[in-house]
Length: 339
Image (cartoon, rainbow, N blue to C red; front, side, top):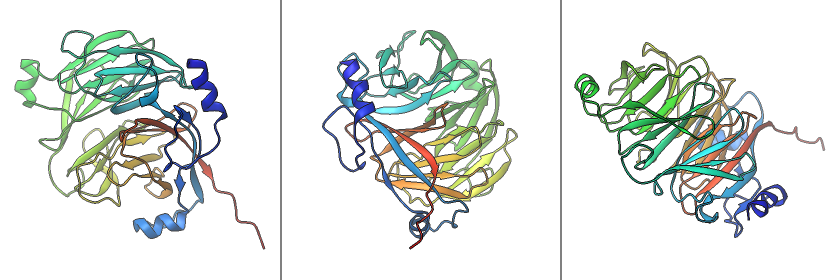
């Protein structure tokens, strides 16, 4: 069965995202928009470069065999330095691991609060160079694993009495981690970001509710940039902010989203390019490090998480049934032919 899945991924013909394939794995192209169309629909400044997001693969995670990588409610995605893909399943209370080819490797977790168990895991992020951090949301903790999928332990215990006395009760919504081992957690109740060092020690709170630079309104997406800045997508503020370690906003640009409850997952690549998806509208944008729009696509089915792979491609998981994993590549658009 695993071999059939891999072969299908390699051989399937391109299909539009809007068409749900009957087979577990397909590849094709999303509903891409020209830069002009993206500008007209989003009221964004015209991109300087003509680029496109081309969908180069997709896999139906919900139709994989039981106990062989099936995911019902994807809530987080990450790709490690070796190209292995990790997807958290909030409904299954597990973390699934795959090769880049989508061959299933194994799973971690299971419903519960004991060591090794999870309750509605959310964000997944590469921690340091070889580790993985998972937000164990309902257990209010951050669990770490090594690059073989072996559990290391609990890096941050938000319910620990001394920490709770210091920062108050936190019901976390999102997590991000960087290659230096730093971790940031979104506290949605107080509209702030809580930062921790590589040892899990609390550093500082950033943000607070408001419209000013460095303040937050409706935090719905979070990622680390290569040099340690935090990139935050706000639904209430309808913007993306790049915030430094001291809480200063060093860049900001508008985001064409409406008020709603959906997430705005964020991913940043090694060049500082920022990908943002709108779970409510199914739109996906890529911006330059300075905020200028590069490319966009539409037609995604409630995207819940994004991650850049080490090969430069962009991974997106769709939470709308059936759960799917999509892969995109940012490419320079072909110049129009002369008549």
